[in-house]
Length: 379
Ligand SMILES: *Cc1c(COP(=O)(O)O)cnc(C)c1O
View 1 (cartoon, rainbow, N blue to C red):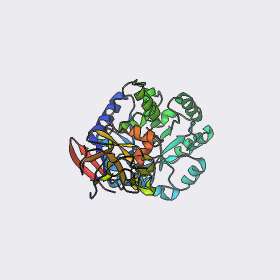
View 2 (cartoon, rainbow, N blue to C red; view 1 turned 90 degrees about the vertical axis):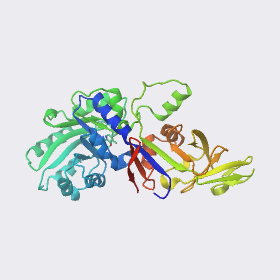
View 3 (cartoon, rainbow, N blue to C red; view 1 turned 30 degrees about the vertical axis):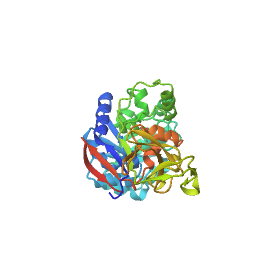
View 4 (tube, rainbow, N blue to C red; view 1 turned 180 degrees about the horizontal axis):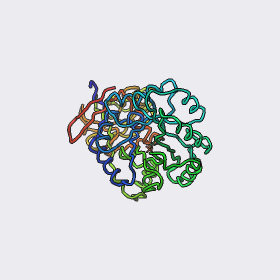
């Protein structure tokens, strides 16, 4: 690591979350850890800790992600949520990666081939998300019947995805309608919920699997960011206390401190002009790291005090307005204590999922367990 800008990932908190989730939702049998997008920006290297804590199925977007996990010698089943092109199915069989069947013509092409080993498949139902999956019960029936005749294909699961945490009843009914011609009990894994579902539904009666995403990383998916800001302003909690612990912190440091005279400017286009004599600090992080330009005028925290980002965010640097309490090489928190990811998301007009995913591989991940660094993941 040649630059002191990094994401610190707290492994203890992640393990705590998984343990707590499995205890709290013990009526399920299959606990999917959604580890797409580099584990929501935390780094794939955390997968082994999730598995150690009880995650017994993994879900990723792409085959690339699945293969990266296999390269780490992790044997846990992996489901690809996105369609995998037919030319790569053999690779899935070889690496024991479960695929999603989302479309009928895709299925018809898939079954044209014989597979050397068992190909595990899950059927995806579109129950109202309007994205991938089947809406037609006859097609689902036909797929089940056709797979029944094959011993190289195993129909291991069926699932759907909810669009709105508060309107899942309607989607559950639609799921039951689309699957009404088949016997759900004959399918080993039925998984319907995601993080937001858990907080509203203790258990979906006919499901035996659940997918943990954001909540596993310690964030409340129901606690929409505006809501958080509003509840903070009113000093009132709308939700019951959230008992999961976040693990993602973004840090950098002050690499130069300088004085500006009244009228002097900062950054591209001189977009900040000092109204009086001020002290500023330069921090080596910028939009090429995924720290967006819209962070202009946002805050960072140094020695437990908040300081404002001034001028335009550059590709690899920002300037911060300081006071005399800051020294060169002081640690700068961009996401963490006193500058929550909710606030950052709010400032950038987005959701916390996006903030975490955008911090890219330019920024190393330092994995910390019991106060000790256990891994440094560089891009
Ligand atoms: C991303 C994803 C999830 C996880 O969503 P969270 O809100 O983070 O829990 C679950 N299921 C599917 C199909 C997804 O694509």
